[in-house]
Length: 159
Figure (cartoon, rainbow, N blue to C red):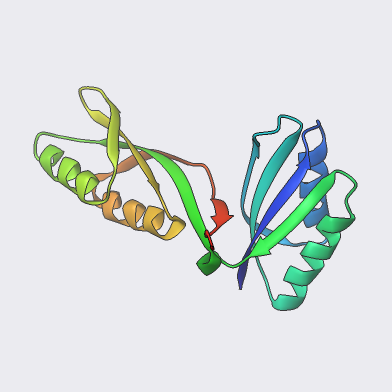
């Protein structure tokens, strides 16, 4: 089971280390971790995707709530949220496959953000599952470098 923890924390040095230490000490798995400032500069949001059984997920939430620097913890499932991830990928092209790479990139919703005489730098921004699909589809062309942000998520809007 995967769960997303949206953790509002005080924007101070050392907070990330304390949270990561909590996971390390208890051998909890972190699938993805993204940290960024919120609209309030004194508060950061940590989006942590973790996996384990229900008991582990409950323990993680309890332990996060005990931390002094933690302001608020929200947990939710992937289906209750909008999840996005950013990926940059460098792909080598040749005259033979250039058109195929451009076409595949377009179909997958990617954007070529830079290029040289032999490489495309392609940006993808989508759900983690679609990012995995993009990687699988571009592998045959020869990915030379790849960087991913990790998952950012918010619960879906409900009126």
